[in-house]
Image (cartoon, rainbow over all chains, first blue to last red):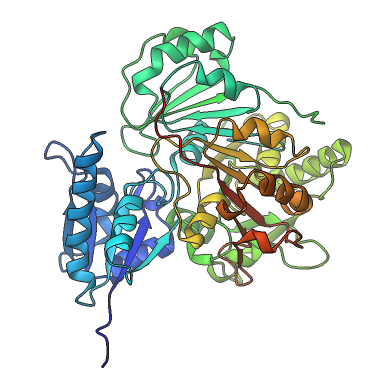
Length: 244
Length: 244
């Protein structure tokens, strides 16, 4: 008995905002598949991934917005991932390839991971491929015109800071620190950096490579800032080139 | 008096090996400029960046291999950067745009940084733009089919390990650790991971996305490995989801 061919789910990294920052491979796959999935935007607005890929898909391709709530509640999240996985599976199981457009890089704190994990748990013979892409720390460094890291510098990336004291631990071994989603703790981070004389070495990029992109430097003048969710802070804490 | 227009130097990230992993923007710029610079390969062999871009440049474009020695000696390095900067400047100063093809991401431990810094020091009115791209940790995670990071996981990236004891400090803090250039210290790292029962959670990707790509898992069986310079180790040390 011949088994029906199952479609492939492609996790396509679409980068940080500039539509040209998708890879050639990612763009090709988005143009080849009949069905394009992406996270549904919040408050009836188009989501970032959907905006980025708008120019490269055609009216003939079917769009599949998937709902991923912005909550911490595990039960609600699990339920949403399960529903998204079931929706996508309906198509894959008919042999239809699906590309999921994912902001930034698909392996880096990405919603796609939960969709892929849920699919693998519930439908073990699913086929999934991911296409890497441009992530926010690299995009932020590029728009600042600064290297993110050089030589023997250690890099620490914190997706969220729950306690500003955590920074002390990192400062002991990392020469470069990236804080993602810095908006909610910005004022406390500012005070910490002020005490450590690091304000002159810290930069914020809000919505890197998007039309609304904004750069903040000379943070001495900005003890308080109202920042977008898509804000990255890079702190250059110093070189320790003479390692043991 | 009208000042002669100076050309722009584009630092183009070309990704980790698969030629399709360059961004649409990077590929466009490589095709638009008359002059393509890249690091000269070692031992008369074509370098990685030159190999990656071979398909997208034309015989009409001039190629400019630049010499960057693989040494630690500061004086030799400075001299090589100075010469490379002078060579590139000759063209920029005639109004010719130059694209420098850079393996991985241009901001992430990249040779381009030294070229750009030397140019800025010696020719302050130089114009430089960088195009971000796919870096090795993201490419490695993608070929493993694993997320690099999820949720509140902290990420530590170490470009080189001078002392395996350094790992202890990082293990106390990060849930995911990436070791670049792991080849020279692999056996010591293996022993450390063995003592910590982390071998089952460590993966190596050699030459990610290149034709010679190789994945090592179940590292219990591999206390010694002869690895390429382009090898990345990802260690998943554990989730600490219940942060304060």
